Length: 322
Image 1 (cartoon, rainbow, N blue to C red):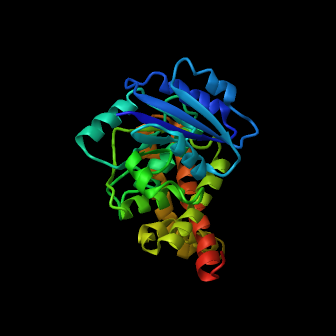
Image 2: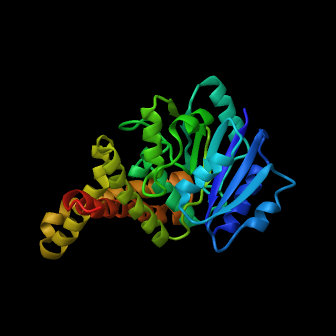
Image 3: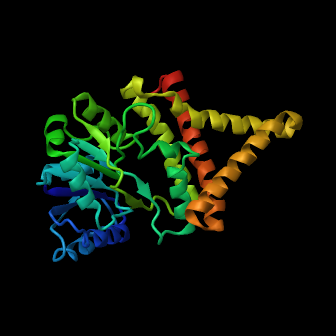
């Protein structure tokens, strides 16, 4: 099996350098790398070319169109049996491709997704953000997990599709706002088999500050409504949970100001919830600082998603604006 690794890139030369370094030590070597610079002003051409003697690598520059269409550009130029999509802010374990190859030979999948985790080199903030996006105490915990409501939808930071999928389904038709979920739904609709490869883990850096993380997750909340506009049946009760949590927090703040006795049980609930997050993160990360920051990242994960969801639910569904 020959893999084509597709990496869209926008103004992140340092990240692609670190990612390509991890690909140089893969135990399975039957792969090429296709880097698509999506209209960057800060290009990585020299960095990518510096790996020409270490990797089978191609570099392309195109006008900015967004990550979904940049991936399509890479698909069109790839020669692999299977296309593997990574975000530029990922680090890849040395046995990743071997794990995927072995799994695909034993279990037929036309498309797959894998989980993400924090690398030991990540900053405390990055580790806390990773916790917020993978914890069982947030809706981030349903990602990278087949055991949740509805179909499994791979996420494009760690996703693979066969050439057969590309030839029959085509590529991304959205470039942002839930483009990977929309693509997964169409793959399902064409009768292809999608599954999780539990061992195909990547280390995903995500954002370097809580403010950047907030903006990203707010965008994800809006993206869920965008998916609903394409596929109404894909809006599940679980997707409303962050919005309900956010409205509950707002109501609790109002009660604490104007009628504190009614806020008593809500305050106790939040305190217990934050304590569970703190000790769970402490066990996983073995760091008091990361455990404390995990409370903040988990709170942001729910409220930022909830606010984005509420914003576009009201605008695009209630007011019916495009």
